Image (cartoon, rainbow, N blue to C red; front, top):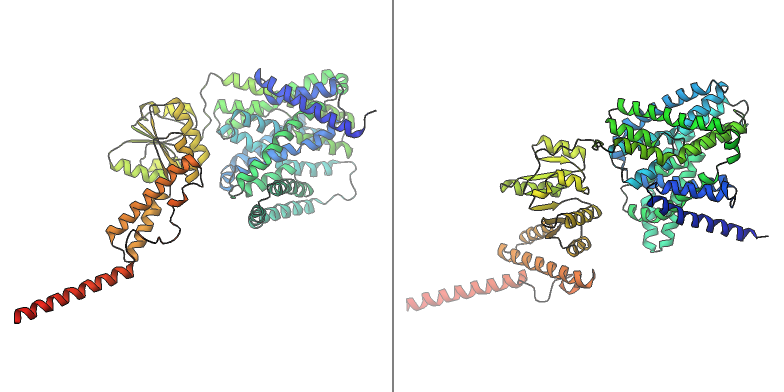
Length: 611
């Protein structure tokens, strides 16, 4: 008989092997990695019976959803989240309420009122894990329909707390120490406020201290502590762990440690989220499905159809294009992982028996497993139609100039002034809807679009452009655009804005035609004017500026070959022994001596004339 250690490691090996084989296979045949993970879980668990206790694994793997929400929060600044408030509390609220009421009304024919309400609203929730993973895989997270789908999922995460309170109210019996509704609300608000204050005033100083130690493993531990700790605090307050992690991510979206945290959490997110999908397959109870086969076969497609129809209608009412509404509806018709939590609580408090809970869990699980297929069906319906999913319609009717500028922040705006003053027409694309609207009011030829997309560049007239100015402010985005333009449009010259020396070197290795660090020229002018103020002659100040610029360029050339720390001999870290000009005191002394000699010569001349 195998020891527990062998059993544990054996299960780990089986799960890893299933993921390694199934995920690439399903990805290759076009069904997606999510369905591959689920299929591996079904094969290992219910079919082959190699692993039991899928529910326990599912409970641990739910941390993958928590990590996913944290990483999503890191990408959302508070201002951007505020911009989504209408979709979150309008579209999201409407979806939960309308889906819950309709499904509860249907279930009233077979369940008592309390059970029908809890079951109906539990089925109204969709899967954050499935929805967000598919959006990540397809790169649609930042599309307009992706943002609306995310808003619905975010409100559903918020809704789990009042639904659990509702289950307590409807329960024929419950825990004796159950909190009163007023106390539950107060604790939830207090916990959220404490988390916001901690994120605003404590997290950055703590990470600064940890970062100064240089111990990478401590930073990883701190990142895990932050995500799990904030999640547990929200769970204690009656909200979901995923919501706590999401709030922590949003609070750190502008932190200088954001990229480090993202890099540290990403591997755990990927592994645990894959494990979550496998655990969904492991937890399928084939006996329950077999005993209630016809009921489940009727309930799953009915659930998918009802929710898809409701989501489609609501999305259209809230202003989505028809294709966008179809994509949202095909992405979120399934039940969700939070339904498992609600059904378990309802069963334990006597709202409905364990048999009903098992059937509901089976319906949710199968509907989740069918999500990749419903999404593919939605793509098939809209495959022949153009994407209409952006905040501003991408109308490039008048585009096509000698210069195509990508990015229109401060740097791009000043550059555009130079070009327009020289009589050059400039076509500008930018991904900020607000910036596009504001700049359009001033008469700029500016269009909404993502410079990382080839179809957007084509529509913006890149084939007619002689020079492409990449003025985006994120190095990663700049690099992606430069790589795309270099490979697809080799005849276009690329002028790129660089972030710092390391980014400048990276761009030069990409063979851009010209790059400029966004601060170098302004810093040189700033230094020259400082020399003016200290009394230096204007001509000499310009010579110094020229010398420093040349030194900097020579050092960049050396660093490009030998590395970032090379060429230090070109740097001026203190006044040089033989400066470019004479020091001010020596210069003034020489001038005084010359004036004295001139006076003496003048006196001698007058004296000679007198004699």
